[in-house]
Structures are given as structure tokens and as C-alpha cells.
Image 1 (tube, rainbow, N blue to C red):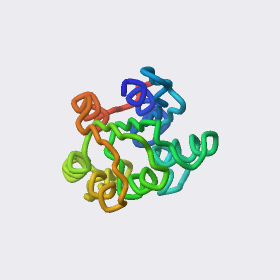
Image 2 (image 1 turned 60 degrees about the horizontal axis):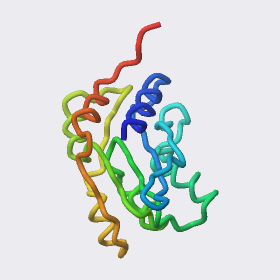
Image 3 (image 1 turned 60 degrees about the vertical axis):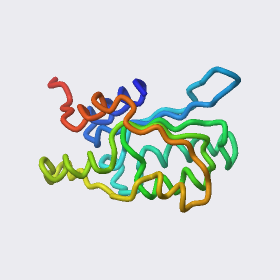
Image 4 (image 1 turned 90 degrees about the horizontal axis):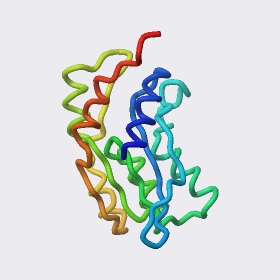
Length: 157
């Protein structure tokens, strides 16, 4: 998760929402990092360039359409769109820091035209259950560190 937090900071440095994700592969008792990235919604101009979706597409292109031995780590709970992609790719597990409720509460208090911080208040766990695919979820992992990303400001140069 620390790598996802680092990716989120880099995304913030380039003007994107500071959200990061990492996908690892379980090999025996080891986890190997396969992909890591930061959000590119603002800089790409595409509202669907969520980091979870982009890392899943990347890993599927190299490892096949189903990813049961992979784990998605995200600083933010996957939205319904990204949770759906987790179901379709049959990801092995999801670990996230802050919830959609955390995002919505922060956006309500601090959102502006530059950072809207919208939330999709459909829990990823609900999408997984309704998607008919069991995906273990660890919520709130390093939550305090991930919450700090809401206030992340790039260093002045």
C-alpha cells in the first residue's frame, strides 16, 4: 500500500487526483509487484481513466483476462465501475485505504472546481456480491495515511 500512496503523491504532483493503485501477484508465499500507477483522470481529460481500471487493463493485457492470483491495492475504495472491472477480471483480492463515504464527506466539505472529489456511494463489496464473484476485501488498510492524500498539495518548486 505504501507504493500506492507514493503513486498517489506523484499523481497529485502532476495535477491529478492523488489516488494510487498497485497490483501484485501471489507466487507461493511471496507477493510480486506487477503494476503501479497514479490517477490520470484530470490530465487525460477522460472521466473513466480511473487508476484501478487502468492497472487492471494493463495486467490483463499481459497475464490474461482472469486474475485470481492477483491483489489490487488502492488508496481509495474502487468505485462501482472499477469494482465491476474487478469482478470481470476475477481479481483474487482487493485492499483499499479510504472508503467512498470518506471521499464523499471530504468532497462535501472541501470540494472545489479543481478537485471535485465526487464519490459513488455504492460499496465495492456490494458490486462484488451482486457480480456473483467472491472477492475478499480488506477495507481501511493504512486509512489514516490514505486520508492525508485528500489534503495533498504538490511541493512548490
